[in-house]
Image (tube, rainbow, N blue to C red):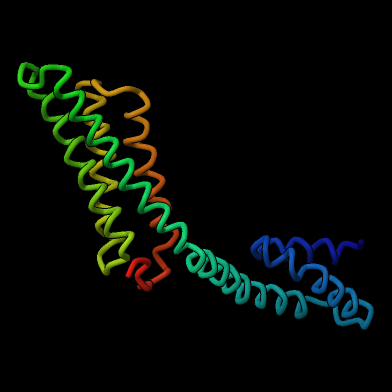
Length: 196
């Protein structure tokens, strides 16, 4: 492999891995053919090649993310079901803790933290149901629920850590993962309902 081919292979790294797995071999063979024919010479060739990479690599990344979001219907359904299950678990856990710690006799910050955690858990259930139905505002509702859940569990953890470490992690890590997932799939646009 000569220096020009090494540079060409570095340019190919701009493309998604799935694209490279499928087409890299043929692209390298085509490059070698062009090099043998003498076309791989001069700055004009490399500038044109870089310009083509700048144009086509983002299209391939967009196609890859679109493919993921189409497949993402299954992931979205899974995320929705998880949101409802985790919301139900956290709500039940919060209510159980409220009865176990004599809620009315606790300081105001502890009461506020536990109340916020229970309410945000219910919000997570509603958001999960909206994601499952894939309504117009489902993503916005899910983002709001995730942010509210994270904030309420962080507030509760800072003021009165009455829930277990597992419950606290679940109340912050899952909503954060849901936010990341929604951010990645924001370009998917409106989708058909998963449930009729």
